Image: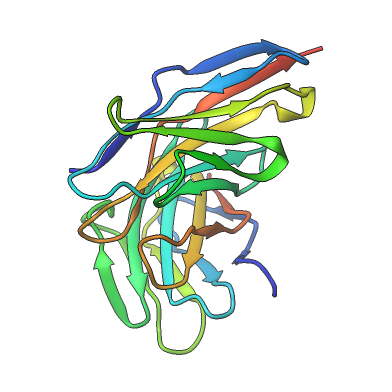
Length: 114
Length: 113
């Protein structure tokens, strides 16, 4: 059973471009979470999704950021018109349904905005 | 609202000595608590969880954690530290309402030979 797959591992974008980060959850997992980690900082929650539903997006910036988890295919975190401050590591995690289940993390996508 | 706090930014331990990484939590319902470890430039790896039952939970790589309801704590422990245990450790709690995982700010563990 493959783990959580994130791609690309590294992404370089110029200011004003769009960044698309992909996350394929573990097989059988219907819940996906996105987190952002800045250097020397902890994990900041961004969004929690189930298939075709956004459960909690309280950590998402109001503008430029969006996320989806379609019925088929990976979850996508999209950042429009990137700025230097968006440079960070973005981690995706997945879990099966249930409060007592742990989440498994991908290796992350390191976004650099130049 | 649910939250976790890790009061120490860094913990330094000599190899072979016992280690403790502290975590306190605040929840409105039943606590679902987790510990994760992150090595440089890697994702987080699950170590252990407390759901219910025994207060002492055993996990991966010889780690264990003690759940203390009266002190609202879930400290991570290991009887004998290894240099290879040096990493960033995160405590997390499940939000009762939405199910999202909320992480503490992380504690850097340095184990010196």
